[in-house]
Amino acid sequence: MAPPGRWVLLAYRLPREPSTPRIAVWRKLKRLGVAQLLDGLVALPLDSRNREQLEWLAEEIVEAGGEVSIWLADSSTAAQEREIASRLASAIAAQYAEVIGQARDAAGKPLSQRRRTLARLRRELARIRRRDYFAPVEREEADRAVETLAESIVELAA
Amino acid sequence: MRWATRPGIHVDRTACAWLIRRFIDPGAEFSFVADIEDIPAGTTAFDMRGVELSHRGRDCTFETILRRYELDESALWDIARIVHEADLEDERFDAPEARGLDVLIRGLSMVCSDDEMLELTGRLYDGLYEYRRRATMLGRDPA
Image 1 (tube, rainbow over the protein chains, first blue to last red):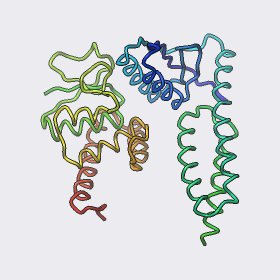
Image 2 (cartoon, one colour):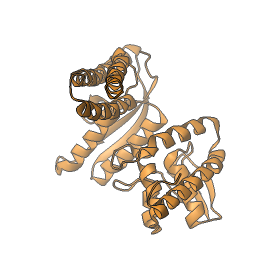
Image 3 (cartoon, one colour):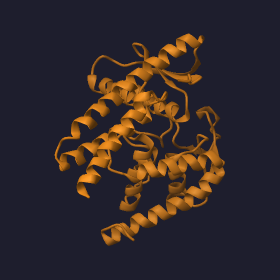
């Protein structure tokens, strides 16, 4: 698990009410797979996509009456960075584990249900991969579990 | 007219540049600036935080420009859905083309300068527009 090197940080504060923009921002941060450093301070490995996504989110926070700033940062120690990276990796690993469980559960189900589950899990895998910066072992396992489900459908249909 | 956007252009900015040149300003000249404070006078900036032609509410910049210039052709809104999903991935639209477009343009940006990107993707969007236009006329995807 190689540490990413540089990070992009988003520091923000949103009014407590109304709650709709707060929830919308929180959902987007979750989707991006941020590391929560403190209340109102999140980090992502720096790349052009992450930086851009946080900039659009910053705009949304301003429109919702909040305060926001974006910073590019290095961790001052490798240990601190490893800690954050492993926290992110284990959160992602848990999401892969969820996919693995659902793929295996679907194995004994009727064909039509398996097809629906397969389509849903493939979309879910794509979403998780998009925010997976450290490729934990569960990633390959999840790919395999979903492919096994796909093969079981092909065999049955053949 | 002169137009400016951030360097390192990707789906939304390449699509906007094509849209501007083809439907708004055939003589458009584009430049790339990283900071909003570096935008030269008399230049219209797009897809930068804090300018009018940028992400607005749930819209990506391509959609903002379509609305601002009242371009309502359905083929353009078809492209807007694809660009939106490639750029924002918020699953607001069903646009399976988005992932492919994202990968192709991201790859192209690794081997091309921004000026080359404008030239190459311009033809790509010409083709995508023609495809969506024919699809609208036929009522199904053209073969």
